[in-house]
Length: 367
Length: 87
Image (cartoon, rainbow over all chains, first blue to last red):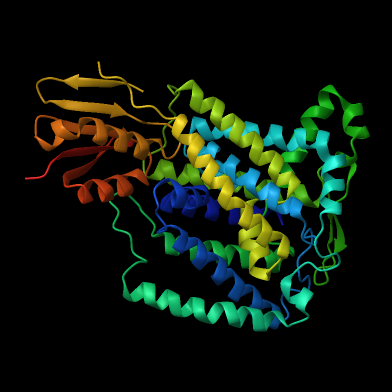
């Protein structure tokens, strides 16, 4: 499991760096520059993942369906999505974006990473009332996905969405919109990155029982650090004591269990290698291109913004719960209503983030 | 962030390395706005140093649309984007 996670992370980090596959940027640039172009690749990835998951399900490869750690939809998902969207734009990258940019030497992203860990831990303070709010704003109890709610086979849904999407993709192909003319060394066309990430999502789901995710581990790291100075606070926290996952994988009979607490569990064994892999995969890519570079001379307001953005994103990732990769490349392809609400929330968040990031950037005065 | 004007070459140089995305694009737009007359008149050219791989695609895209000639050169571990008056 650890080796598989590390290899998947390395590949993901490498291809994301080569294609500069920045999901935060895709959402942000719709509002900031009126550019929809990069969103095309995200749509390809989501639809591709949806088709792959459904095929795998029909072949009996996904006994855990929908996958664990998804809940019925709640308005809390929408609010958390908005906060997440704001945070990812201020931080200059989503959770995976922050990891791959940090891997290539970005100090801004390293600061955002610290914010992520801090925000994930601080969530413990608001967990009791936030989980109450989440419960009372639950929209349809007992149903996780749209096909479950409507009692329709997921195949029908996938065909209804997938077939028109494929027509659209062929149209974009005819218009030559998949290829970007780029001058940087070692560029990977983002459509290739989208396909590779969709395949990695499938691989993760089939091998581990869940798609790619990372953020519970940030809370775990925060819990481990807090335990050093205030063990009692961790022991008393309902959030850190919670168990989010406890089941046996029907194929391997492996026990999958864990939660955001400081213990070493399956969640840590799944996610930590993915996190480390993404950072190292990107470092490797940057070193091979001789583009690895650490730059410390940065405007203080950007460092503050990145820290605040990381913190918001960490908080929101626990409030949802889950990050954009988990929801857009895992939950959305199985039509989890929670993920749909999270996606809707990302748009106003990214719009607001675009407004704020403009104030973080200044053209220097002429000397 | 530093900027200097080289009188001999008439360069406005802006170093955006390491800055948060999409600073390079935002600053490029602001600089084009501010120094548009000098750039279009051919008196000066705008040089932006960046390590943002995406900016080497988006800035030329937009600058060419605005009627500038754009050149992207690799330098050590970063890129130099030069905007000048189109011939």
